[in-house]
Image 1 (cartoon, rainbow, N blue to C red):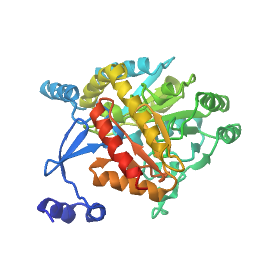
Image 2 (cartoon, rainbow, N blue to C red):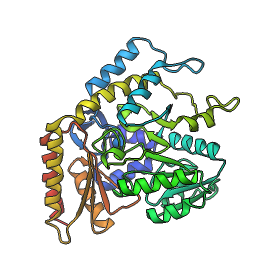
Image 3 (cartoon, rainbow, N blue to C red):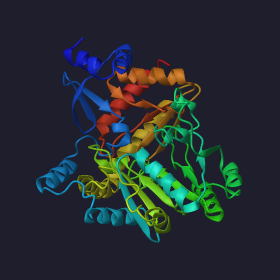
Image 4 (cartoon, one colour):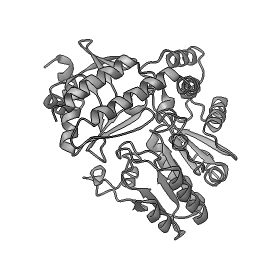
Length: 411
C-alpha cells in the first residue's frame, strides 16, 4: 500500500478506499486536463464522469482558467453581503436570453444544486401557502435531509428514518396521474427533471411538458424544472427543455453544473418575478435564500466566460459530428447483443441500458479496469451513464468504442 493511500485511509474514508481496492485499482488522481485524469503514476484515465457532469468543457479549460485568474488578479471582492454585484445582473440577462424566457425573471445564486432545490421549494411554499409537493418517480434532486425525500428510491433514506419529511410528497409515474393530482389544487410545487440522468434517461416530451405545466398554472401550483445536471450544454442545447422542444416554460428553473467550470460549487435559481417578490419581499427576508458563499463574484466571472464558451461549442459542427458518430457507433454495438442494448442520447448525455444490473456492473467494472471512468445510474442500476465533454475529440470517442465493443462481447 502506498503512503498516499495509507494516509487517505487513516484520515478520510477507508471504506471507500476498500471499495476501490476490491475493484482492483485505487487511483490517486493528481492532474486533470481535457478528457483525462492522471494518477500518481501519471497514467491517463479517460474521464466520462466529468465531475458528475460539471466538466462540460473538459478539465481545466484554458479559457475558464484565464477568467478565474483574471478575476483573482483584479482583486475583485469574492462576496459582498451588504452590497450589490453587477456581475450577477449580467449573468441573469445572459441566461434569460439564451433560455428564451419571457416576462420578468429574477436570479438567485446559491452554492450547491441541492441548496437551489430547497430554495425553490421554500419560494413555492411561501408563494402558494401550501405544503404538498408533486415529484416524478425516478428523479434525483439531492441528498440533504429534505431533498432525500424528493426521490422514490428509498436507498437515499436508509438509516435516516429519524429525519422524516416535513412536507407531504406525492410521486407520479405518468403525466395523466400528475394532471389528476394537480387538479386537486393542493400542491405548492411540482418538480421535474426534463431528462433524468440518475433515473436512466427518462425524458419529458414537449407534449407532456405542455400538459403538465399548464395544469400547474391552472391549479395555482408552482412548476419547478430541475436542470442542475441537464442544463447549459449537457443535453446539446442551453437547456434540456429546448433540446426536447418545450414550448412552455416553468415558473422556476434550476441550473448549476456547467457554469462552475468544475472549479467550485455554484448554483442558480431563476424565478418568475412574482414568486421572487413573494419570498424576498417580506420584512427581514430580503436575503432569506443567501449563504456565506452565495453570489460569489469569482463564480460569476467564470460563469459568464463559460456561457460565451458554450455558445461556441454548441455551434461547433465538427464536434457535433464527432458526437453524433459516437452515438451511432454505440447503437451499432448495441445491436450485436441479444437482446439488443438500449441506447438513449440527448446531446452529451448518453445512457446505455442493459438487461439487468449485474451486466451493467460488469461492463462498468471492465471499463474501470481499462482506465475508462463512467457511472451507473443509481435510481436505475441497469443503466450506464456516459458523459463526454463538448470538446471531446474523435480519438477519445474511438478509444471508448473499441474498449466498450470488446467488453460487451464478453457479456
